[in-house]
Amino acid sequence: MSNAANEPWSAWAESMQKMMSSPAAMNPFAGMMGAVPGMPGGTSAAFDPQQFMKALDPVEIDRRIQDMRAVEAWMKLSLSGLEMSIKTMEMQRDAYASFSKMSESATKTMQEGASAATESVKRAARKR
Image 1 (cartoon, one colour):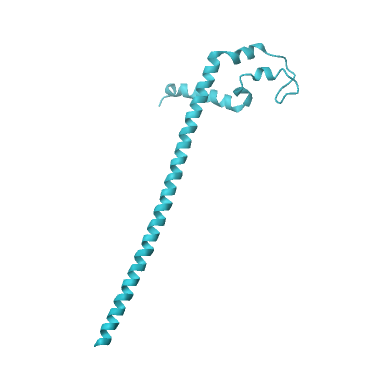
Image 2: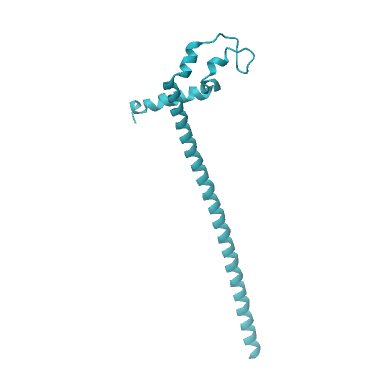
């Protein structure tokens, strides 16, 4: 693939990386928290109305929702794959246990048949 085809994805990945790198980026009201000294994560910096308005911008909120929905879909897909792997391994375990029991049963049946045949031959030899 060409770089031009990957450009939208790389921009999206970069924005997701920035958003996930700091918890404040996930909070639309992070700009307000900075104005309250003593709050966790807060500083004594002055209130930034431009940052606050950006956080309340419906386009920005919709963009963040879309980004989070994309992450949610990816996580659901990953979870689905993990669940399928677990189910497959459980089926393998159960199949192995079934084959093991079948093998034990067949071995026992063969041994019983062999001992019965041996007894029959011994009885036939005694009758002669």
